[in-house]
Amino acid sequence: MKEQVGQDVRRRVAVDVETGAVAGYFTLAAAGVPLTDLPDALARRLPRYPSVPVARLGRLAVDRRHQGRPLGAALLWDAVQRALQSPVATFAVMVDAKDEAAARFYQRHGFIAFAHAPLQMVLPLAGLKPAT
Image 1: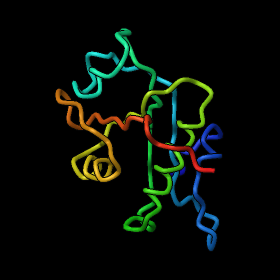
Image 2 (image 1 turned 180 degrees about the vertical axis):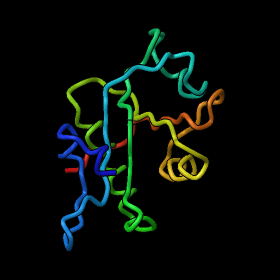
Image 3 (image 1 turned 90 degrees about the vertical axis):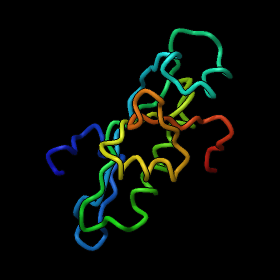
């Protein structure tokens, strides 16, 4: 995991206060998803642009020593908050879950799977409020 943490993600890193070791991190990037790829229930409510702006959660990782704790959820919440507060228009946070267990984690946090790619998931930001 240390090899994956670059200078560009240092602000999105959780550090173990006892050891100073990286406990988890995430990356976000601006992206677009074709409107036709979104689940129908979401696509029907959107303007008919060819693509929709999203914040892509590229990586969400928690060190094995910290798994089973709420660190992954806290990092995910931080990523969603950053997307909500972004000056760039963002419809949703999108993620490609690495496996079924990861997909279940994201589903518990409100993500919706794409019909054609069940490990590709989206969390609409409408209705969510930025933390104050």
